[in-house]
Image 1 (cartoon, rainbow, N blue to C red):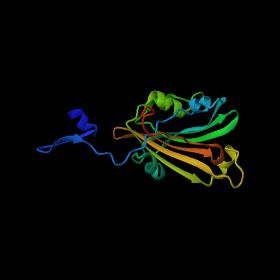
Image 2 (image 1 turned 180 degrees about the vertical axis):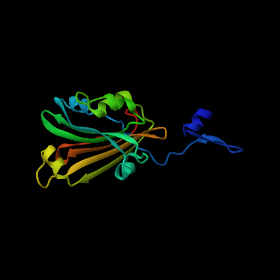
Image 3 (image 1 turned 30 degrees about the vertical axis):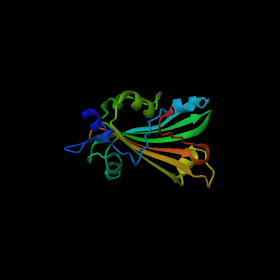
Image 4 (image 1 turned 120 degrees about the horizontal axis):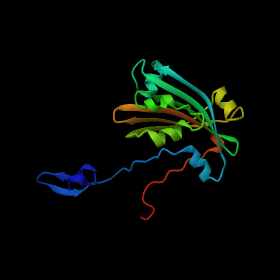
Length: 188
C-alpha cells in the first residue's frame, strides 16, 4: 500500500482511509529517441556529420541553458543528421563534463552525441521545449532551407539527480519534420 501511495495511485489519509487517487490531468511522457533509429525506422538511410567539437568553460549564456556554475567544464558538439542524404536534424549540444567526464575522450566523429548519451549516461529527469523559429543563416544553409522556411526546434535539458547532464537545441526543417506522441495504453 505504501508503494502505491508513493507512486500516486492511491491516497492514504489518517482516519479517512485509503482511496484511489483522482487523476484529473495527464502528463505527457517523451522518450529521448536515438535519431539514427528514428530515421532508419522510417525506412531511410542514416547519415551523420560532426561539424564542430570544442571544450569550453561555462559563460553566462551557457549557465542559463545548461544550469551549471560559472567556469564549469563543458563540451560543445554541433552535428548534422541526414535521412537519405537530406538534412533531417541539426544538433547543437552542450555536455557537462562534470556529469559526463567520459565525453571528453569521445571524438563524436563516428557516433552522435545523442546516441552516445542515450547509451552511456543515465538521466533522472528531462525538460523539453518545442517551438517554431526563423532559422539563423547557418541553420538555413546546413538544413538547405529556402528564405521563408521555418525550423521546428526541440530544446531539451537533462539531469541526473541534481546534476545537469546536457542541453541540446535540435533544429529540423519545419516542412519535413513530424513529431508524434501517444498517451495511454494501446490495450485500453
